[in-house]
Length: 431
Image 1 (cartoon, helix red, strand yellow):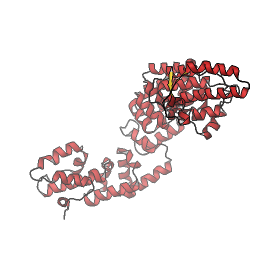
Image 2: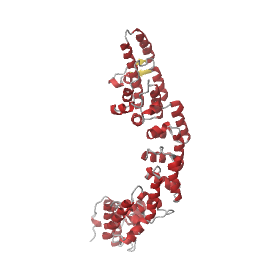
Image 3: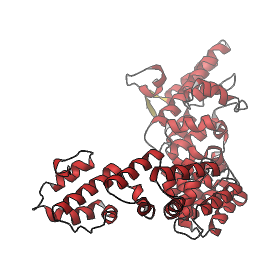
Image 4: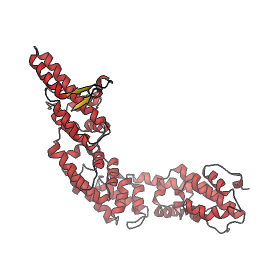
């Protein structure tokens, strides 16, 4: 085993490549240790060897290569010739090897005061390096859960990785899971919990996305909290797909108090959206974690911005609950355009509330200009419905209303593109 000079001197600013042989160093160190006249010299050698271990671990953790586990263990075993005579400097290890700040290390070291040597932490770092965690991930993990460095690799961590791999997670996905799970990854119950969420959400990527938004996903009891919440949602005729979508948009919903879930269901029903409706999931999303007072305020803003009556607002919300999530300013601008320029009645819009979901600059206004231009030039039937033109995808809209008129209106594609950028082409300036 031969190490390059920059590795051994990484923390001392050494840049000139120089080859050292650990096999050659160790006999010399042993000889010098026997000939030292006082313990201070022996301590200096011990400190040097610990410094070497620190450099080796830190270098491999910062490397992009993910298959360092075996190499790291060999290197660490090669640097155990001398043990520290005065104990293990935990705080220095956390800073130099794990990448923690001094403040983080001071706080974390209090939970690791029982450690007498770096043997266990080194083994854990070798395990993490083998999984492919970056140095930043390792630092974040150790800062959050210092006791992770005390976990048994062979008895706990490695078996958990094997079982998670058996559930279908790749090693890169497990590497993403470890910093998020932190202390929960040290518990073997993590496997059964991950298995449940994979079955519920349908894919590991969805699980990791939800878990990223709710680090407490592995904390509560599955039986007492999560499964009870899921059961309540299923009583509302929500299927696994809808529950999965809700969990992605509302990660904390699965671990919320069950009474809060019941309140969400009641609020959705109060909006006129009933369980079994295709809009029920969106209604839950709109009222999630919002008090009844705030919901009432949103409905009031909705009516003022769109000039809707109570009946109109009720129809709009029941057909498209997401309308409640739009800001008062956005509703006002879109409603003013649709009523004042397009000439639509507020009641007409209330029965087609999804119209308000489209961008004013990117779709509503440019398509109105195209429709009006075509009608005024006799290229489109005057009875053509504006709402129908709004619903088409960009590709279909171009095929139906832009491309067929290239000869009669060769400028139309450029004018439409300009209108979508917020510009006003001359051909779209109507009297």
